[in-house]
Length: 339
Length: 298
Image (tube, rainbow over all chains, first blue to last red; front, side, top):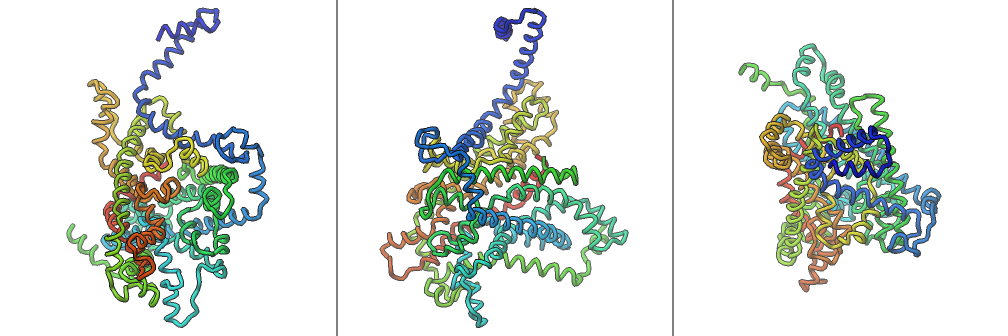
C-alpha cells in the first residue's frame, strides 16, 4: 500500500515533501477505508451489477428517441439522426393527446375516488367488533389481488359479452341488451374500467389501511370513549390523523404513476386482439398500450423510436410529478414525505 | 378481569353494526362475482352457455371441460412445472442476493452506504421504460426465449431490499459486534447470525417474491415466443389460452364438432389459478405485513 502511495507521489510533480506526505496519508486513509469495507462491498456487488445492467445501461438506448431507428447497431449509418422529430410528433399529433388524456384522466379518477374510499372503508371495517368476521372478509377481499389480469379477462367475458351475466339479467328483466364492445358504448368504458380496477385492488388497499389502523394504541381509543367522544369524532380526530402517513405515501406513489397504467387491465379487458372494436380501442387506449403496440402490433407500423420517445417522456414526467407531490406533502407535513 | 371480558362480549348490536356488516357482505359478493362466473361456466357446456348465457350457478352440471383439459391439456402440466421452477429458483436467488445487499446497508459502519442507496432509489424513481429494456434483453443479452429472462430481471427489487434492510436493522448490533470480536467474518456473520435471526422477515419477503414471480405474465408475454411451448408458464398460458384451447381441439381431432372452447378456457383457468390462490390466501398475513412495513420511509 505504501509503495503505491510512493509511486503516486513520484508521478505527481509535487516538490514540497510536506504536501506529499499529506497526500500519501490521505491516499492511505482512503485505501484503508476501502479495505475495511471490502467484504461489505463484495456483498453488494451482485445486485449493484444487476441494477446497473438493467436500470442504467438501458438508458443508452434513449438515443433511439432522437433517431429514426431501423435495426442495430445503434450508432450505425442506417439509423439517421432526426433529433426532436419524434418528440414533435408526440406534442403535435392529436391522436397522442387523446391517449394522454385517457391515461391521466382515468388515473386521476382512480386515485381521487379510490384513495379516500379506501380510507373510509378501512375506518368502517375497524368498527367491526368481531375479529373473526373481519378475518373472513379480509380473506375474501384478498382474492382478486391474487388473480392476474390474464385470467380475469375471461371472467370479464362472462360478465360483459352478449351472453354474459349482465345481458342475461337484462334479458330476464325484459330490457334491451347492451353490447359493451361496440362503438356505441365507449362512453360506458371509464365506468367499466373503474369498477374492474376497484374489483382488483380496492379490497387489498383496504386491508393495508386496516392493518395500519391496527397499530393504533387502543388506550387512546378507550380514553376517547370514556370522555364521551362519538363514533364519528373518534374516527375523525384519532383514526384519520393516524392513517395520514400511509395515505400520503400511497398518494405520492400513485401520483408518480399517473402517466403509467396497469397494462394488463387496459390490454386484456377491451379485447384488443381479434375483435373488430376499433372505436373502443381508441377510446380507452393508454400510453403503455400504445408503446407496446408500437413495438409489437402487426396492425400499426413498428416504430421503436417513437415508442422510446413516449417512454422517455413518461419516465421523466412520472419522476417530476412524484418529486413534486413529495415536495408538497413535505411542506404540509414533514413526517409523511417519502424521501 | 373475566367480568370485564364478559361485558365486552355482550356489546349491543345496533343498526350501525348491521349496516356496516351489510356493505362488507355486498363488497365481498362483488369480489367473488367474477370467480363465481368462471367456476359456473367451467361446469357448463358451450351449448348451455350460448342458450342460457353465463349464470352464477351452472344450469346443467357437466364435467366435460375438466375431462377434456385433463386428457388433452398436457401443456397445462408443463406450464405448472415451469412456473414452479421459475418461482422456486427465482425466489431463492432473489431472497439470497437481496438479503446479501440489505445486510451491509443495515450496518452503521458501512462507509459506502451513501453511494449504494441512491443507486437503488433511482431505479424506483426512474425506469428506463419498455423499449430500452426490451432491446437490452433481446439484442444485447440475447435472452429472448430463455428461462433467465423470467428469473433475473426481477432479482433485487428496491422495495424488497428496503424491506429486508428495515428488518435487519432491528437486530441488536451488539450481537454482530461480539461475533466480530470472536473472529467471525462479515459474510459468516450474515449467514450464521443475521439470516437465522430474521427468519420471519425472510418468510415475509419470500412470500412477496413468490407471488410476484407466480403472477408475472408480462415478462413471458414480451420475451417468450407464442410457439415456444417448452417455456410456457401458467400465467402465460392463461394469456394465450384462446389460441391454445383451439389447438388442443385440433390436436385431439375434434375440430368443428361439439366444441366447448369457452368452458374449457374457464376450466383451465380454474385449475391454473385456484390451487395456488389458496396457498397465497393462507399466507396472506405475510403479504400484508410485508406491504405495511415496506411502506415506511425509503
